[in-house]
Amino acid sequence: MLRLIKSKKDAAHFLEVFEGCAKWDGSKHYIQLAGITLMKYPDGRYTFHRKNDLFEDIKEHELNSSFLYKYRKETNAFIKGIK
Image 1 (cartoon, rainbow, N blue to C red):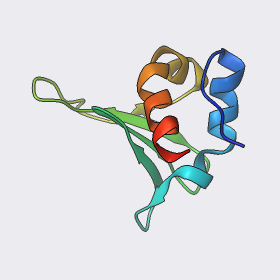
Image 2: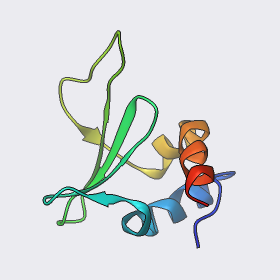
Image 3: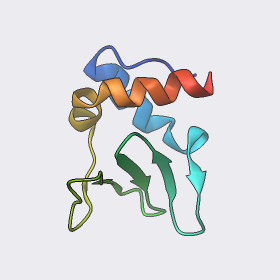
């Protein structure tokens, strides 16, 4: 069951259920948030990419529960939208 991220434990849980709420593009599961794309590859690797009107990451970065906790506002908005 997907729950809002209120603690680092909740952020770790989100990664465990990631595939169940993500879209599949043929090569990876992904979730599009406001300015951030979260991705999980078939090899189990999680990454993120940030992009907005003023800034874009040059490459993907490793995604972990600490990042999700830091960006829990954006992630929780996504969770509320699918409940």
